[in-house]
Every structure is written in C-alpha cells, then in structure tokens.
Length: 180
Image (cartoon, rainbow, N blue to C red; front, side, top):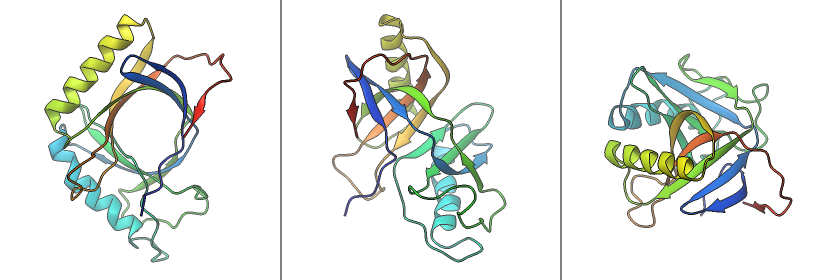
C-alpha cells in the first residue's frame, strides 16, 4: 500500500533537477540541537512518530505521509512530518509532547535533485553541492537552507527515494506544468 505524499506541481525539468511548486501544508515539526543527519534522524523520527501514532490529546492515529523533511544546520536542525490533506492547525489533535509544533508551511517554489540509496551526511552534502552547482550554471537564484526529503521506511532496501531541495526565486509563466 502506497504512502500518501505531499502534493506538488512540477513547473520545469532541467538537467538533473526539477523546479516544483508546493502549496502550503500542515506540518508537525520538532527542533533539535543535532547538527548532522545521523544525530537527527532516529530521535526526531521517534518523537514525530509518537505524535502520529496516538501521542496526542485525542489518542488518535494520524496517517503517515511522505516525505519526512529535515533542515540540518550547524546551529540546530528540524524535522517535519507533512500531515495528511484535510488537517489544519485548528483541527489536528494537540500533541502530548510540547516539543512537537504544529504549523502551516508557506507555499514555495523549490529546486529539487533526487538520489537513491540510504541517505548519509556525505550523500546529503554532495547532492546539495551538485544542486547548487546546477542552479548557478542555469542562473536560477536560490535562497535559504538546503533541506533533505526522505521518502522510504528504513526497512525498504531497494528503490529508495531521497531529495535535496532549496527555495528558488521563480516566476511561473508556463501553463503546461505537470501535476503530481
């Protein structure tokens, strides 16, 4: 059974990257002093999974979605689960853990590069660098932090999907975009 994914629309494909539009979404987020993927992945996932598996004031299970989003920085990091369509900051059960924050992400245009296998700090850094180099080559302005998106459960060994994204300054002029 496929896990629902955060909706997005591809507005351009170029070289090894896509430019996507993501509408706003309801997110459950934890902040951490972690400075690496290895430090953030397991503890962050456990806290957020506890919330969606009933660790909330209604004891309600919330469906898992993809991707898991991580913003990993030397000054601290965050991990977010996208909430299923239909949940808002007003109607989602309140987390029992005060470290789980429910917010609405802004809509955004992002550049995306995809890679397979199990993510590591090294693979995340190398693909962020590759994305940055392609954006510079294509003269596409970008800003903010490079973020990691993970789509697979740890026990899925093949066909793994990982992505690095960064916000881009984009003025959409084509009506021929592809929807996902």
